[in-house]
Image (cartoon, rainbow, N blue to C red):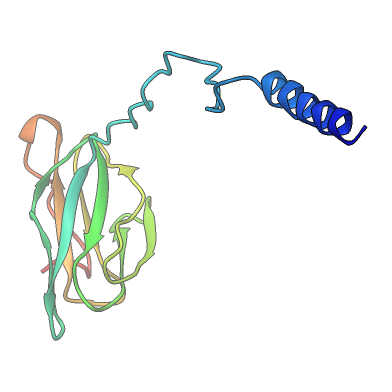
Length: 141
């Protein structure tokens, strides 16, 4: 009787192992996955904010970006912002090492400044590399 119990137990184990299947690797429901989508291309013009010890500037200046999207990259250790001299666009504070969101500049060109550093000003040339408009007002240097 003891032997028949051993045979039954061995047979039960054999059936259980056989019913589990052979390959334990996970199945892939999509054998041909598509590659990761390509992120959108950012064609914005980058204007760098550079300098140290209160001697800050925008570069390039003027920037050839009339009618184009522009981002400002702060490469200094101080916070800056950008305001078009006519007040039509304000880019809030840009922390050290950060880059602003893209904004589209007027196709006729424009002048701008940093309100936190009154000696910082810049210009955007008009579309087709037309010269920037003449700077007028208290933010012209």
